[in-house]
Image 1: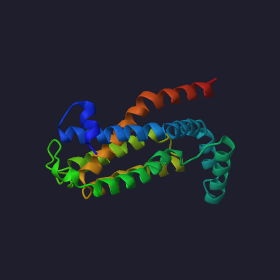
Image 2 (image 1 turned 30 degrees about the vertical axis):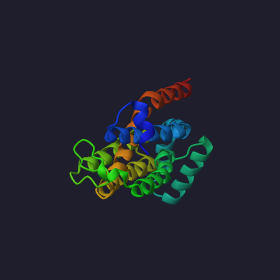
Image 3 (image 1 turned 120 degrees about the vertical axis):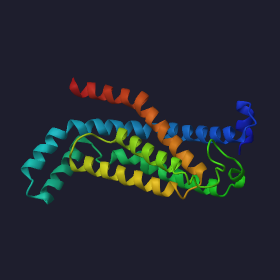
Image 4 (image 1 turned 90 degrees about the horizontal axis):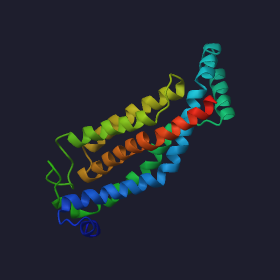
Length: 211
């Protein structure tokens, strides 16, 4: 698994070789998912645009939740907005995460390789450093991709983001360190993409709506 990367970067250090293996694989996955992330960004911009209409509906039908939900769904459909678009990149990543889980757990080479403070990438990080980083980066990535506002869909995404962050802290304490390291790198790359690429697209879409 590591021999190709070892020769590519010119190092015999297995820790670095495995790190770059994970980094390069994760970057490729993010590149493949970039069109979906861009689509989600445009949907988020539209969600912001319809916030005034959403507040009007909430005020008008505050005593009739069923009608309010119907009117909100009709507005989403009219504007071509997917209220759960912010969750899609995270959900799409889950099959990749599961595949990585089976690859890492079926590969014994990680057991004899340490990384920084960890003695083995094949064992869970019992210091809680990686689990906490996993939760924090999951939360940060989710916040950057979620729509702003206080409408039900935005609140749902915020709640889901908190749940997923806590969930990954808990699960990362049980997972092999190599798998948790993959998830952290994935989140950090997503944050960089969001900041340097997606935000520019977002500002461009917002400028179009303002014209």
